[in-house]
Amino acid sequence: MAEFPRRAGRPRDTAIDERALAAARTLLVERGFEATTIQAIAAHAGIHASAIYRRWPSRIELIEDAAFPDTTPLEVTPTGDLRRDLRRFVRAYVAIFGTPPARAAAAGVLAHHRSSTKHPSAAEELRMSARPQFREILRAAAPGSVDPALDPDDVFDLLIGAVWIRNSVASTPSRQRPLERIVDMIVRVLRPEPA
Image (tube, rainbow, N blue to C red; front, side):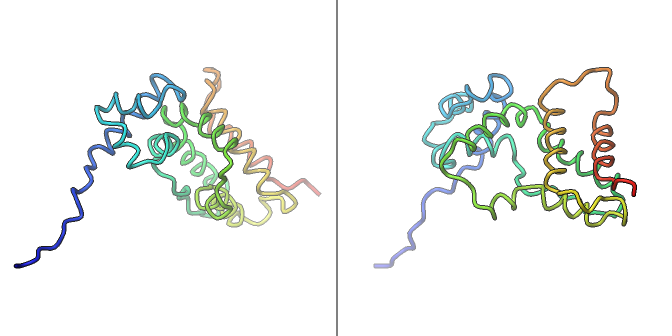
C-alpha cells in the first residue's frame, strides 16, 4: 500500500489576523484601551476568541500589533544638516505614534510594561528604540553644532517627551507649526554655550 505524506493541517487564515487587528484598532479609538479586550475584539471581528489566542499570547501583544504595526526603528539616514535631520526624525516619530489607535493604546501599553515582571532585554529595547538613530543624527551634525558636554540620552528624552505631549494632549489652536517649534527647541538645547 502506498503511503501519502501527512498534511500539516489547514493553512492559517490570514484574513482572521487582519479582522482581529482592524477590530482592535476600531475598539481602541471608539471605546478606549480598557474596553479593548480579547472578547470584545472577537465579537467585533466576528471570530472566535480561541482564534485570537492562537495568534497572540495576550491582549497586550494584539493591541501592540494593531496600534504600532511597524516596530522597527525609525529610518532616518543622517545628512549632516542637524535641523533637517531632526525635523525628519520628529515627523517619522509622529507618523508612528500619532495615529488614533496608537494614541489610544500608548498609555495603557506603557502602564502594562511598567508594572510587568517580564521586562524586555536591553538588546530588545534598543532594537525597538529610536535612541540609536537620534545618536547617529547628533554624530553626523556639523562640527560645533552639538555641545559635547550634553548627554544625548537626556536630550532624546526631552525630545520624545515634547513629541509625546504633542501627540497625547490637544494643543492650543493658536500655536502654529508645533513640530517646527519642537525642532527649534531641541536645536537650541544642543547648541554649545558661547565661550
